Length: 451
Image 1: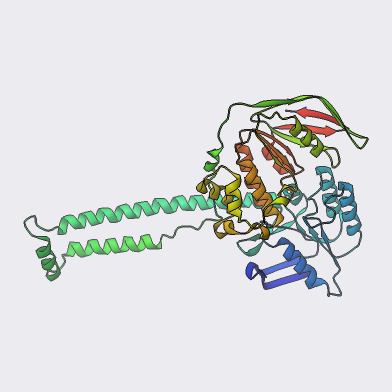
Image 2 (image 1 turned 30 degrees about the vertical axis):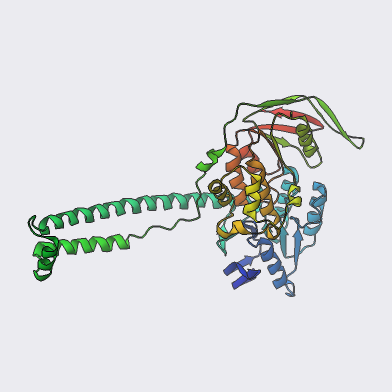
């Protein structure tokens, strides 16, 4: 049964088009994953669906928000799980969920995924968590290039389809380039032949030759050659270059990371207590350049506390950058995006534009005032400002929480190239698998390291 049919709708924000919808539908039993870049309009679309169906007597629905504006952001994972569980017991037809796994560790995110799959209802879920999207979704709505398109399948299947399309595009581009080169060579050879057959005599001036050429008839050979050239030129014009599927940015510029002398530091064994509560016992560890270490543990296990202990143990001789979850609250909002990163990093203008483009700040975006940026956009800005300061150690506390999927994948590419010591807290399983090479696990109040 069809719950909702959306046709020919345009959404605007501050006088600018966010996206257009030609046709979208929600059918009973759908579990739709809504993805798009920061600021693309995911929450706007969820709220529009909520508004459309509020007055429908035969459709019951509930909108649950857990993203950057959620009041639950400082609550434990179990509180969020219980909130969702109680919401799913409402027995409504359609649930609209906005970033349900944002503050959850892997175990709690899995609980939510299993709850959703067991609930006999329909879902539309905005999420940046690729593991979650793979686990629950039967189809995706992708907000991209100011349109919303539908894909039947989960995120992994969507990326696989993207790879297939990219391979086909590259094959078409190679074919186009080969054919273009062949046609141009053919035209050049015929023009050379034409020149040989109609060249002016050596003892005739250029002006005399031009006058005589106008008056004389072109030879049959010349006509035949000219027709051939014209046909080849028409062929060249009809050989249309395939359009790229997406804006593609080369990441070779990430070689701007300067290889430094190998650095290392140690932390001592420690028993950690907060307000009389024992959190964990940690042995001593040594960290070295090239390490990409994940601090793993359930909600409330003391991951951020351990990261802070690591920070306090780093010697003053090493340059440190620390990404804290709300570290961007002190940004000077009157500055433009470009002004801020220019002052904060050692990159030149070209390098800055490249890195900002990779994180989806393109064209006039770099002249945006910080005050109009979304939380996800501020996270990207904060990340760039910390990363390119010639640091020896980079500490990241839940950097993926407010980033869109595209930005997370860009951050992964950047961090893989980072030559220093990287230590991070994250619950994003895809991010962890793609970046981390070592794991420090906090389990049963013990801190253990795995290569």
